[in-house]
Amino acid sequence: MEDRSHPRRRDRKRSYPRKHLDLPLWVPHPSNTTHSSQAGRRILETLSTSTNLKFSFIDLSAGYETFTQTGTALPEKTIETLKKECDGALFGAVSSPTTKVAGYSSPIVALRKRLDLYANVRPVKTTASAKSPVDLVIVRENTEDLYVKEEKTYDAPDGSGKVAEAIKRISERASHRIATMAGEIALRRQKIREAGAASIHKAPLVTVTHKSNVLSQTDGLFRETARKALAQPRYAQLAVEEQIVDSMVYKLFRQPSAYDVIVAPNLYGDILSDGAAALVGSLGLVPSANVGDGFAIGEPCHGSAPDIMGQGIANPIATIRSVGLMLEFLGEEGAAAKVYTAVDGNLEDGKFLSPDMGGTAKTQEVVEDILRRM
Figure 1 (cartoon, rainbow, N blue to C red):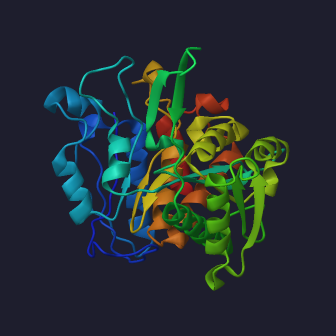
Figure 2 (tube, rainbow, N blue to C red; figure 1 turned 45 degrees about the vertical axis):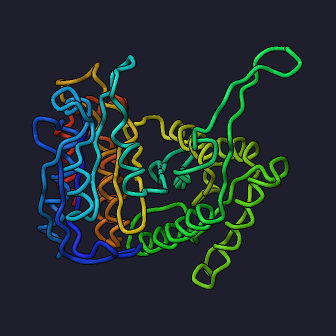
């Protein structure tokens, strides 16, 4: 099951980053939502009463349930509505078949391609009082590298067996725009800190991750282009460093508090972002966003958790943080800071924690506590 929230577009050519006050939003039909995903809508409705932001909601369909009913997981109507009427989205927990089903493909993967959402952005954050505090964002290039899926298998000419090959494609265009996205995120995170959100960092830092010591052509191009993009005058206040990916993994787990924004090609970013989720103990805390120029889809990292379906105990925090992340990419740093501060307060207080966090609170109790703090 999936859900999303999307602000309607007034200007389809609007460039990133964008800011306005009237942000209509879309979420899926209630029959496809859970208590956790409905939390996102409630957060936005609360923001409407405490800020100048205004939201409206559009119901659209996508996902495996839609596939079983219509034969497609992502109807054209959904795509066209997103392109023409919406500014952003909240994409909730997804149920997918556990075995191959003819004709079915992931709707979120299709959305990334159709909307050119070239960056996967995953913040990982503990509370400030945690024994080993973490507050970082991994910015993963979403369109190329080994994930172009150009592979072949053939018989070795010497008869020694089969050989499999895969293309690793890195382009200057994709590398430049993902590094630029990382720079913008670093600047925006600093704005959010200045707006009052708690953080272990005082100044913005971008770490460029690569393996150019071995892959001098592909990763070398990524490194060179990223450094060039981040050398633009707009990013003069950023500190920029580099890290070879294997030592990056080591240092990420040994000293995670040293990192602010990490930018990486697709494969490295995929591995680092999943590994980093372990630093905070539960996927129920980890949001993400698929982002392009002028459009963002917030998406909690966890699945639909069918083992606890209907029990009302799913952790809503990843969804709520995904709302904040979406608001960041709509240029609403102040509203995002309100969301993050309320979530941090809930976690610091520890009175209303879901079972995955060692507590006994129901989903609704966690949501209500966060809403009170807003």
